[in-house]
Image 1 (tube, rainbow, N blue to C red):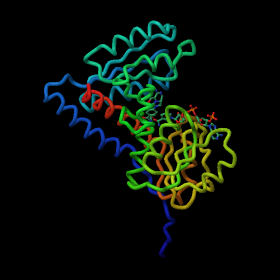
Image 2 (cartoon, helix red, strand yellow):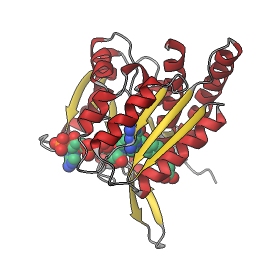
Image 3 (cartoon, helix red, strand yellow):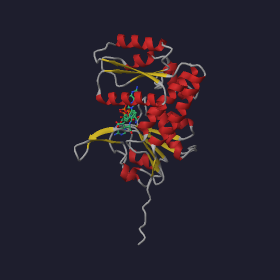
Length: 291
Ligand SMILES: NC(=O)C1=CN([C@@H]2O[C@H](COP(=O)(O)OP(=O)(O)OC[C@H]3O[C@@H](n4cnc5c(N)ncnc54)[C@H](OP(=O)(O)O)[C@@H]3O)[C@@H](O)[C@H]2O)C=CC1
Ligand SMILES: Nc1nc(=O)c2c([nH]1)NC[C@@H]1CN(c3ccc(C(=O)N[C@@H](CCC(=O)O)C(=O)O)cc3)C=[N+]21
C-alpha cells in the first residue's frame, strides 16, 4: 500500500552548521599562530553561581579547546563589587593574550550591567554589546556582530541565501537578540516588523511573515496557525521545563510539531544555541586578526 508521506519542514541542523564554522575558525587560528601571532584567547567572566550560566561557560571553554584557542575563566563570587569587576575588565583589556572578553549576563542586581559593558574595549567585545559595536552594526560599518543574532542569520541563509524583499517578523526587542537580528535582516533587504509584549494581533502579523524569528522565552508561544505555509522559522527561545518523565527538557518559543507546514524550522536544542557558541569563537578570531 502506498502511504502518502505528509509534507515535513526541513529541520535546520544548527550543530552541523556550527561544526563547519568551527573548522574554518580552527584553520584561521592555526594560520594566525603560524604567522607569529599570539594564539587567540577568550576570557569569560562569570559573577555569581547561576547554574544555567555555569553550563554555558563550561560549553564555551570546551569550544575554545576544540578550535585551538586559549581560554581563561574568571569566576567571581556574587558579592563582587562593581569596582572590583571594572578593575578586572581594565586588566583583561590591557592583556595581549586576551583578544575576546565575555561577561556572562545576567549580572547580580547590585552591578550596573551598562557600566560593565561600556568598560570593555570595543575591539575585544566579542559579544557585540558595546555601544560602538551596536552603532557599527546599525550603520553598516563593520564592527563585531552579536553572536546569537548572527547565528540566526547564518541558519536562515543556509536555507535561503537571498532574503531580499521578504517580510520578516522578529518577536522580541531585547538588546541582545531582537533588536540586532532585526537590524541584520534590514541590512539584508528584508521588510522587518519588530513585535513585543505590547504588539496587537501578533498571530495575524505572524501569518503575513515569510521569516519568523522568535526570541521571547515564552515556551511554544508560536502556534501552528501563526505560521504561513512555506515560511522559515528561527527559534531562539530556550526554556528549561520539567518533562512528563520528571526530567528537565529544553523547549523553544515555537510549537515545533505544529509548524511542519513551514519550509524550514530550527530545533531546540540543536539550533540557535550551538551557533551562538560558533559565532563567539569566530568573533574572537576576528578580534585577534584586527588586534
Ligand atoms: N540560543 C541562544 O544562544 C540564546 C537564547 N536566548 C533565549 O532567547 C529568549 C529571549 O532572550 P532575550 O532576548 O534575552 O529575552 P528578554 O527577556 O530580554 O526579551 C524578551 C522579549 O520578548 C518580548 N515578549 C515577552 N512576552 C511576549 C509576548 N507575550 N508576546 C510578544 N513578545 C513578548 C518582550 O517584550 P517587552 O520588550 O515588551 O517586554 C521582550 O522584548 C530566552 O528564552 C533566552 O533564554 C537568549 C540568548 C541566547
Ligand atoms: N554575555 C553573554 N553572552 C551570551 O551569549 C549569553 C549570555 N551572556 N548569557 C546567557 C545567554 C544564553 N546563551 C546560550 C549559549 C549557548 C546555548 C547552547 O549551546 N544551547 C544548546 C543546549 C545547551 C544545553 O543542553 O543546555 C542548544 O540549544 O542546543 C544556549 C544559550 C548565551 N548567552
